[in-house]
Image 1 (cartoon, rainbow, N blue to C red):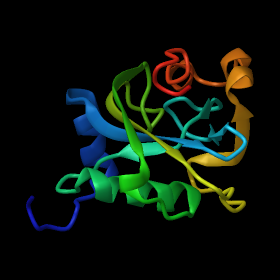
Image 2 (image 1 turned 180 degrees about the vertical axis):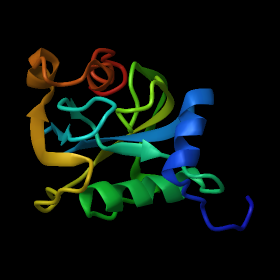
Image 3 (image 1 turned 135 degrees about the horizontal axis):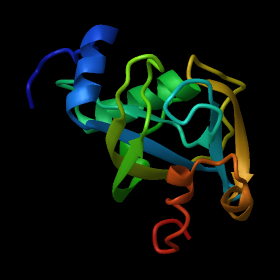
Length: 162
């Protein structure tokens, strides 16, 4: 692995990347002891105004374990241990819009989905991505039309998350 600090792109460079390449990201499927899944109500595009699992893109020169830990801390304010998570597989997400909501460019993600069980609920915490966090029963999230179809995909294959 390259021993460098991860590079966070400025908005102008990031939109050029979004226009020309897929982004590699991690989604965190977080389950509590009551078998509920943590979702955030997104404030930003893509998937604005939908409930979605927490997640984010992997930065240039950032390892997957580091990105996993950073995303959990940034989006939820909690420390998660990468080695305790189960890798669920690779998913693709396509969106007709992008984070700017101004530039005409779709967004394509290659998503590394990880499932982790936690004992304690995250604190009341919101970031610039989520209006609120909420726990959902698996059956109710599948029926809820405000839960994004890309999130529902993690629960529609029973072998992934029983």
